[in-house]
Image (cartoon, rainbow, N blue to C red; front, side, top):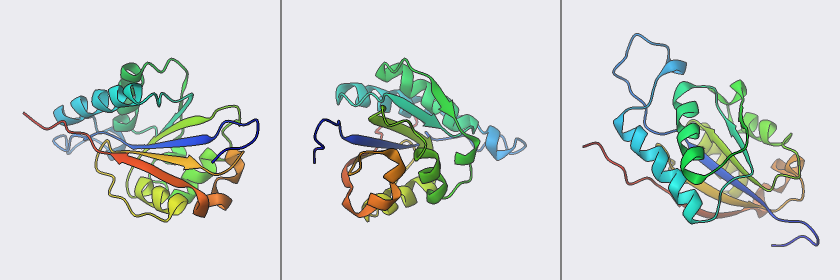
Length: 172
């Protein structure tokens, strides 16, 4: 896929790393990462760097587990730009993720979005017609067949799911 004079759009979809359920008295939005999650996020950041997939724009849910994940991923992949936090990504549908992505400026070509299931799995399916299991801290790469992020939803059947990576980090 190539557009004359334009770089292709690449969407990186990351589910937040494993969060802790041991603090039953805190709201879901405030749940922190557990030990495994604290290992998963750096692993996926390193993977992005190794694959030369460092994003040029990052959007994250405002939930603590997503914020902590994206901070670690950004550090380990070498991303130095702003991390955009969007409260619409918490408890959202795939359609809401598309709405958030549709306003990304077109001069950004590789976008990382960090969020939650079932929305991230539904987003992969919506954009590619492929069903993929997105375990905690799984990363999907989708090559977008559109010149503009505004056209993301209308081009869904022509996008390409390049790969899905799952973290190997386990609890000790």
